[in-house]
Amino acid sequence: MEGVQWRTGRGGWGGGKKRGAGGQLTRGMWESVYLGIISSHPLPGLLSSVPELPLCLKSMISGSGKSWLSKMDSKRCGSILISNLATSLKPRYHFAALEKTYYERLPYRNHVVLQENAQHVSRFIALANVGNTSKKKYLYAFSILPMRSMDPAELVKQPQDVTENPYQKSGKEAHKPKMFSGAEEEPACQFFFDLSKQHGKKRPSDGKGGQHSQLKQPKKIHQPTGPCWFCLSSPEVEKHLVVSIGTHCYLALAKGGLSDDHVLILPIGHYQSVVELSSEAMEEIDKYKSALKKFFRSKGKRYVLFERNYRSQHLQLQVIPVPLSCCATEDIKESFILQAQEQEIELLEIPEHSDIKQIAQPGTPYFYVELDTGEKLFHRIKKKFPLQFGREVLASEAILNVPGRADWQQCTASRDEAAAAAKAFREDFQPFDFSELQ
Image (cartoon, rainbow, N blue to C red; front, side, top):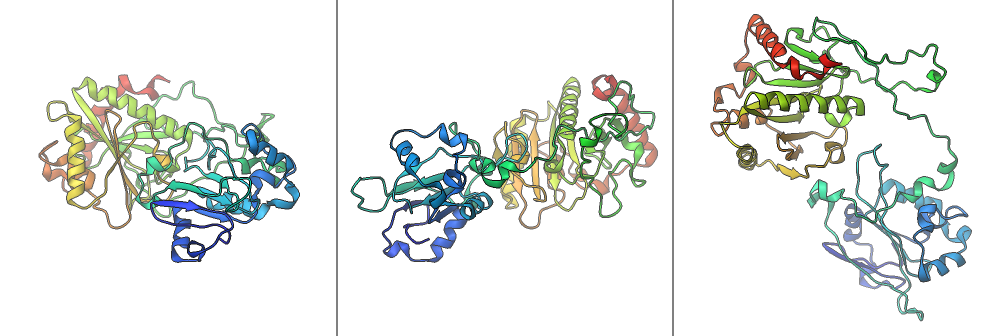
């Protein structure tokens, strides 16, 4: 940390070779790592770990910065170690001061677009030494909030001038052969219960006869740790509740549902949450959501969807229709927020265009609500969470007014009754079922 001054908190500033009180290794410096700040003596590899500068950096060099970089001895001042550190830590701000000059590059991404979850950007700033005769900039003022106090969607927001990550194309990584990661299809698990018509579907590669079959790598298969009630191949699954089967997902009536048309969207394979789903499965879930939205609209209802990724081992997207005459979407949203506040649950609204995968990492417990307008509410579960929270809100007097059905175990039907309800829903939903039209 030597050679750079710091002041942590909401505001911050950095400087060159002058130490003073701000240069002491204090608790605040350790906190600065949590804030997303690192400082380094040598410049990282984004400028000089290889003889040639990354293309994304060359296009941004201009003015005095260009003349400085052209004179820089890349073999002397580069550091692979600092490059690796910056790649691993993904700091929000990275300061360097050893070269005694000022340089600031455009912010860069810390994720691969369309391949990884969105993350916060990083900003690299080199500062000159204090009192330099060339009057180069040696102070940098900025305002920063701790990550833990920021809205997740705001944290990962990408500025318009963001560039690709320069470290991903530097050093040895540039010469490593990339593993084949084309758009392989997830093997289609076919199940026949006199429900789905699988005509015309593309057969998954079986590794025989195709000249490219040897290039494809099998995807990781998720396996349940014990008996799973929702894996479609499991003997425990209650197949009489299934109403539609796609290639990667299926639709089933909820056992002990809030209403006769309370349904679940579930992956055929074993996935714990939405953030772990393959792109193919996610695309099919979106198809089911769109079909259900149209179906319920035709019945004079709007749907509410929620997911509880907590104390559950198989993804269940609960889809509950609410009659338009009961309440407006804004009333449903307000009910969730008010009841969350009463139970000290921090339920945040996230941007409509955002993806849940941009906010939560695999393995992160969370509760998520999606309204028919596209509005979304999210809670990151950090301690105990009421398992029936979503049902309790929707069963309340303000919405469905069926408080006695908040607990599914108190309102289960007999097998024959459930099978009859599933058959009726299947026939009613058939004109909207995309799996029947393929």
